[in-house]
Length: 388
Ligand code: ADP
Image (cartoon, rainbow, N blue to C red; front, side, top):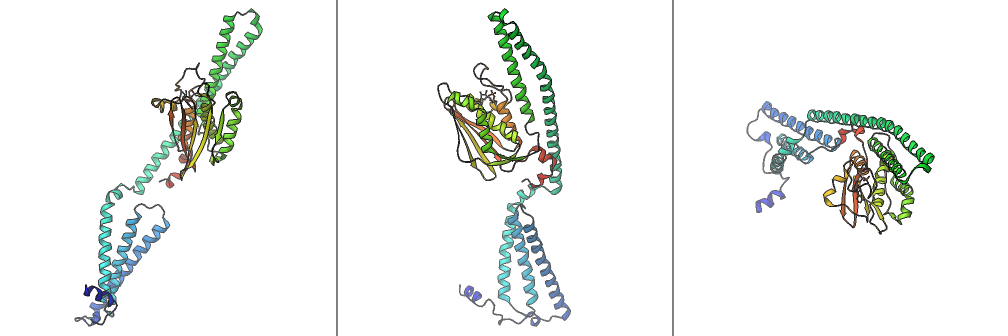
């Protein structure tokens, strides 16, 4: 212990030894070869950590930065031992030299441990070649997806256009038939006309909903969309229904503004709110609550109702297109609404799920990133470079 304290007390004391030039018999050439070599190693060892530090400061998001810093410290300390070795030809700082060597030893061991620990992780890191190959594949897949989406939209648009005009003719002729010949028609005939008109109306809704579904995510024109305004518009659109059913729709706090496609966001809230009003319990005034929580890089929205609820076994199925849990006579609908909502959220990089107790109500949860990028954005730009 005494030696330990004495060592630190006399750390800078060099009186016990002669400088290295005076130990043994150095020739000029031998001594200077030793000194110049040590100084060269020291300079190189100084430069490596400086380059590493500059790299770490300039390049954000480098994986395993801890190992980089440790490696830098290790090389710096190794360099320092060579500098002291050269200086000791004039300045016999044997104690300082021992301390620096001890610290170098510790940092070396820590570096070895870190390298072994992170070996597997480092093996898993992609090389820039692997990364750019993966990036190309992802971009190709996204372009393909965008293209097939566009095709689907075109198909749906043409089909809906072509289907709509004969449908209009059918509805017009049915209306005409009823108006012109109603006095000659018996109850049965009139009932047939009204059933046919209702079927044509339903087909129109289906075509319109399918068209809306196919259009989702097909625009890259994003604008700031104030969600408070979107919800206010949706409430306005449902005013008649709200008054007829004595419903209340409440928004807790203030909703954020997102840069997105106005129609997509409108579709999202419109479908969720209209379902919350539609799937109400008999003799219960519908109560709808819209909330949002900030989750750092994303928002978590909740749309709750006190309606009929959904059995757990259907919690996934309801998001598939044309999946309905009720007959047309019970609740009207096309089975496209929640599929459209899910499509918007999927394309925007969020997630949707439902929590529900049958007979009590449902809460639709969904998340949306604060900065929304569509598949097209990914496909058209090389913004994937900044992902992850
Ligand atoms: P639609 O309402 O046109 O039938 P959706 O895709 O919007 O189609 O919904 C799919 C199914 O999910 C609905 O048929 C209904 O059974 C169920 N559903 C949706 N929203 C609710 C809700 N808020 N409460 C209870 N059931 C719901």
